[in-house]
Image 1 (cartoon, rainbow, N blue to C red):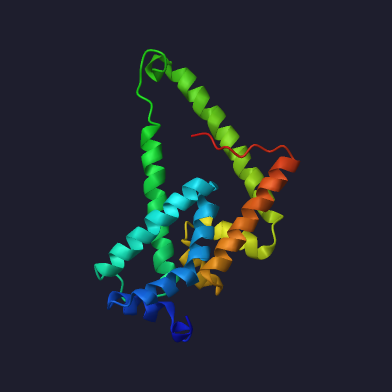
Image 2 (cartoon, rainbow, N blue to C red):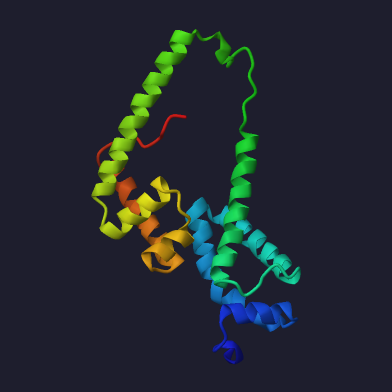
Length: 199
């Protein structure tokens, strides 16, 4: 839609809030692929990604219509945050569905304190080895990827914060993290390294 080409996403969002439905169509066209790629990166399942994408856009429309968007930052950050929240809600729901209730077959209270201490020591040793392997693999990543992994995993920064700190777009930060994880998985596979941390 040529009439919207010169407008920013933020301006289009405010036009939609004022009742211009074509402005939303343009917003959707501009942002749907980036948002879908982010969701797919997070869930690795096409059917699930499609469901989350639809839920996200329903929430975006509702929030826009309720006046919850103000031109206070990049529109793409705002919709990615909504998608992130939808994904986290789904993960929380799935986690709660997998909660196991204690019964006679899985009751850990029958373990002696010595057995529990040995189990904890073993898990600590395994986790320590895994973290050493992860750090070693990180050292072999290209510097931009290593930086993003460190900030995300060890400093618990959001991708928005990482993007601001490193002076790149959020998509670039996400891309670096994606490639870092792919590289680390490849390294782990090549060297038969298990990366499942014990809880």
